[in-house]
Length: 145
Image 1: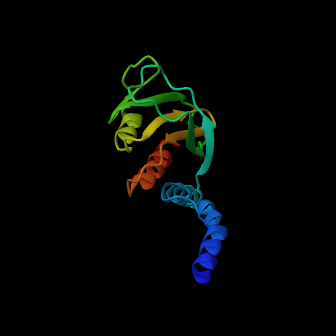
Image 2 (image 1 turned 120 degrees about the vertical axis):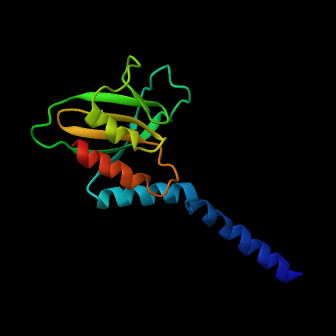
């Protein structure tokens, strides 16, 4: 009887340690972010305000994968993935630049937004479980930078 009481007390004392262990999803996100940093990208969480016409609302705090732009690339644009492979601007007009569209079409469905400023190129990604998604994003950012 005392054995069971001791076992119960030890179990109760060690149970909070299970809360400290990250979930599988959190571990996958951490692995994606560390791999992206190893590939030369920066990663940060940002609060996004998404267009009202999104069918499925992306998370309000979304990870941004970014890289600096090369000199000479001064074009600025922002496209959202309305549906799988359908990239539109803020007025829901399809992407007309064939160079940009070629890279955007190959991105995973959970890349919600791609944006190019004068200094940075950003991809807002939902960090899904597709095995080659990070490589596709890195390749697109490298070409478009």
